[in-house]
Image (cartoon, rainbow, N blue to C red; front, side):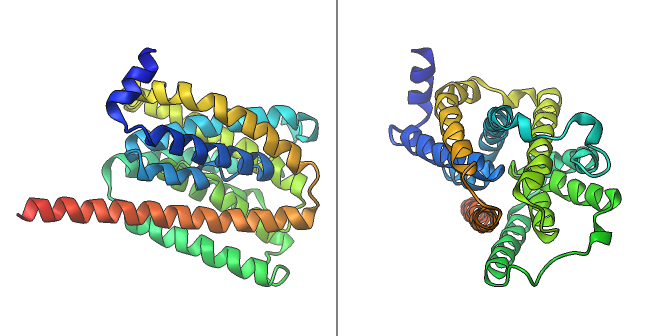
Length: 278
């Protein structure tokens, strides 16, 4: 009862059902593709301030990945095979990039950067769907150093958007990895970076985890986990070709989500600036 009374005092009656619907769809699509929870979940940032919404998305994405990985553990590589051809190099680079992304979240205006990255994802996804075999990288580009650099870029992006998997998913698509190999890299990477990001937030910005945060988490987790299971069950029936198509569709959706987030931030900044000027 305390949870619902707290939520009722801070949000309108329509806010919670809308959040639940957005996060339920996010969980289904992430369970289906192995990534993209925060891509669709970014729509929540129309309703929640970024300093509340981004950590909430990180936490729910972690729960989503834990549930998904648990159901697919038979397909995962053992830890001894994580380096150099598994998620190890990506994680190493990502851990370097995360502090930069979190610093951006808490100190710098980021709408322009989000808009540029969102537009890139939309263009890349559209091009890949139209000409799926014409854009790829050579096998020589799959070294651990290249993987670490891609992971670092993902860490920076994930720190301020809660969507670290974008860069790694794009890279996996360029390498034309089968769906099980792609998930073997992308999902441990996303989970590792989300947990590290949350730990750093807890140490540097403990005020992030306010009573409102925990109340929203209590309400949304029971929706996210069953929807994740539904997505994983759908994934098992996909071919590699259909998996790539869904991946490109989600990349485009994530780009749109970032553009929407950026547009909202720009609008808010303009409103504040106008009010200050008057």
